[in-house]
Every structure is written in structure tokens, then in C-alpha cells.
Length: 246
Image (cartoon, rainbow, N blue to C red; front, top):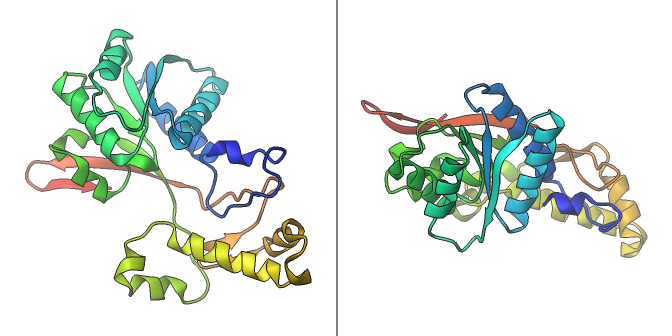
């Protein structure tokens, strides 16, 4: 949630996973790079912290580039009928759609667009990314051409946690496992100073060139990290081959 980057509201909040404020910037750059095909953009987002935060970040960077949205519409993360949202995109004359959604609802939106004949470019973020996202589709071919951003893995982490996790079925199936490990270890190291007193001060000290399992971490003034950047990926359907995530 980009909201947690507010150092005034959350002075003692630290994280080793980059804020989606940065992903909103990356996603806006991806969509702009596909202009004029992207044309006028309709933004469809969940109203929870992930969806609303990512959508607001995207809109902020998008408008800062002098672009406008033809539509911005939100939905509850429990929604299962997206015909209205898709029709609103069509009625607004949008040339493309940007989704701030999770995998299951994102798949439903994209399949609804296909059924309703809204054959426009679709973009999204890590909520709909990854090869496993194809499992949420009734017809995976509907994802053909969808472009997404997803946090890039650190080039090299320290220690043996990554190898140990990869050898364990439960750990290997998780997400952000190395980051979670780093967070616990950083808290532990900070707590060793002054027997756990003044934790915020000591976390800032620990978070300087910290060589973690998920990469090197440096806390910014607001407790965020910049991360390793973002990969730009696409779903592709090739009739003679099948469906794949590239």
C-alpha cells in the first residue's frame, strides 16, 4: 500500500518489499511506451488497499505525464460480475484498459471483455502476473497480449536461505519468502541493540547496505526500499504451442 509510505502517519513502519507507488510509476511507463496503441486509458481497480493504492499511484504518474483517463472505476474485491465495468469502458470509448486487481478477478474481467467483444489492449501489475495466473482463466487464450509489471527478483542474495527454501515444498510455494526472512532477521539484529529499546533508530542503522537473502536493502527516510526494479512481461497464446508467460 502506497499509503504506508507516509512517514508522518507511520513513522515506525519499515518494509523490504517496494511500495506499489513505485509500481504505479513503472506501469504508467509501460502503458505510455505502447502509445498510440494504448490511446485513451480506462482504469479498473479494486477498492481495497492494493487496488486503490496502485490505481491512485498509476493515475498520479499518468496525469503528471500530461495524459488523461477516459474512465476510472472501482469495485469490491468480492465482486464476480464485471459486465457493468466492461460496458463502462466501452461506452467511454477507451482504447485500452489498465487493471489493478488480483489474479482471479483480473481473469474474470479479461474474459468478460473477450465475451463482450472489447478487444482492446490490457495492462496490469503483479496482481495478475505470473504463469500460475493462467490457472484462473476458463479460457487462458483470452490473456493473449496482456502486458504486466512485476517486481524484479534481486540479482543476488546472501546466505543459504534461498537454497534452503527452494528445497522445501511449502517454502518454495510461498511469495516474498526471502523478504519475510530478511524482515525477521533485521528486526532481530536491531533488537540486539539496547535490549530492544529505540527500535526505529536501530532499524535505520541496520538498514544501510544490509546484505539480505532478498538482496541489499537501504531504508529511505520514510522506511521504504527502492527494490530491484520491475520486469515487463506478457501473456501469449500460440495455437501450435499453447499458453505461456514471457
